[in-house]
Image 1 (cartoon, chains in turn blue, yellow):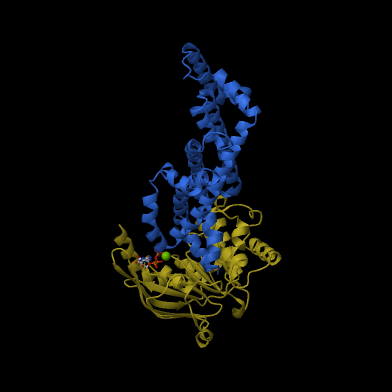
Image 2 (cartoon, chains in turn yellow, red):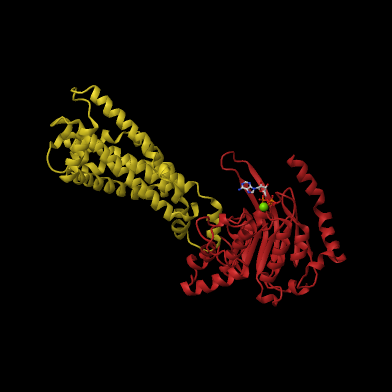
Amino acid sequence: MSLHLRLRPFILPLLLLALWQIAAMAYAQTSRMPVPGDVLTMGWTLVSSGELPLALLQSLKRVLLGFACAASLALVVGTAMAAFEPIGRNLDPIVESFRPIAPIALLPLAILWFGTGTPAAAFIVGYAAFFPMLVNTIHGVRSIDQGVIRAARTLGVSRFTILRTVVLPGALPNLFVGARLALGVAWTSIIAAELAVGAKAGGGGSGGIGQMMFVFYAYSVDLSGIIVCMIGVGLVALIIDRGVRALEFWMLPWKR
Amino acid sequence: METLEKMTPKICLGGITKEYIAPRTGQRTLAIADVSLDVFQGEFLCIVGPSGCGKSTILNMIAGLARPSRGELVMDGKPIRDPGAERGVVFQDYALFPWKTVRENIEFGPRYRTAGPLSASERDRIVRHYIDLVSLTGAENKYPHELSGGMRQRCAFARALANEPEVLLMDEPFAALDAQTRLILQEELLRIWGEELPRAARKTVVFITHGIDEAVYLADRVAVMSNNPGHIKTIMTVDLPRPRRESLRATAEFQKLADAIWQLIRHEAYEATIDRH
Ligand SMILES: Nc1ncnc2c1ncn2[C@@H]1O[C@H](COP(=O)(O)OP(=O)(O)OP(=O)(O)O)[C@@H](O)[C@H]1O
Ligand SMILES: [Mg+2]
């Protein structure tokens, strides 16, 4: 690839950044307008002090914990719902009535049940991640070609083994779609959860990236800090999505 | 063929009726009515008949994938209720596992079957044997979507064979192939089936086809089916010498048999065509 092509994806962001800097300088002194230069220095301070990586790591831990629990549960429930008609028929109304409830609406419950630490945040994340994973699991298992299941049965393979060797690999592309969507909503909800949990717990300690944002918002009223947090979250989420895609590429060689 | 009649049948269909009931409308379709058929050890039986006369229905019931509404279905004295490794099936659309390579597809039965799965080394030997047998050497690590139609067909065939079934059920396996590939695979099928072997060592084959020539070329007996409701009209014995060669198709006996079958089904074949348009 030539240098020109390699740089192309960066041209537009750099241009926007320059515009931002110019606009900020033009409307200086209002302090509600963050300036790229300030954001940069703030970013450097937060990274070198280790505060930002620590906060991101804390949030990442919660996201992965919530996601792992939600995904395993969704996998089992979704497969059961899709593979066994009566289970699907009976659980569907329950699932569909919980699905529209925003994860944030569960915050009061989460805080009352789990306090203001990792369990509460992971619970919110798990709740948010559960539904995209469930819906895609159901869809994936249902859309498996009945022909290959019949073929496996005529080879003398038991139903349980078929579930493991035919149904799961067959549903895997959809499971990956579900996982990527679930991780996406997990990140959006961890910020909200930590903002709120942080508000309740007050400042101090590593309450994750959301709490860090809350501290910048409520105590030091520092817009640059908030922007740095946003960029940090964006980068981590991007890295995770790329990781999942790489895993997908590796695990689905027949889809290449 | 008198010898056949004296033997006890390998598979026995006794007065089978199959009625499908549509789940939502409750509409009933009488697919086949009162079909009785004996299939003998080592025999190559072809079933021909117009579209929709219930050929696949019969095959699926022998496979254990569907149950008859009435009548009994017995193999080696035991009723058939479920699919089993002793009855291998080659499906019309091949039904290969898209996420498995040729090798993994073929190895599936010996690896995961409930009854006597094989160790890795035994599997390796069997898989290699059948890959060579169906001439897929070199394509072991390809995925089904990377194969030609004929190669997929052979892979499906090898997958069924590698499980070493006693009975091989084939539902129009060559229908989607071009004429040349079909002729080649017909010859290969006879070789793999064990045309040169004594009857007791051969597999028992039930083979559905639309091709009358194909049926006469392959079969020991041809069951001719008829419509409304599906039933077996006649069973013709094909007393042509084995091993069979391409040149056989041009002989007068071959043509006579093919023509006799055509006369039996042409009327209904026309009707089926008219119904469709
Ligand atoms: N699952 C099903 N539900 C309802 N009716 C069915 C079902 N399967 C088959 N039938 C009906 O049973 C009859 C026989 O079908 P079958 O598939 O056995 O025919 P066939 O002889 O194999 O036809 P073809 O040569 O076109 O493959 C048809 O009238 C068909 O509509
Ligand atoms: Mg059919």
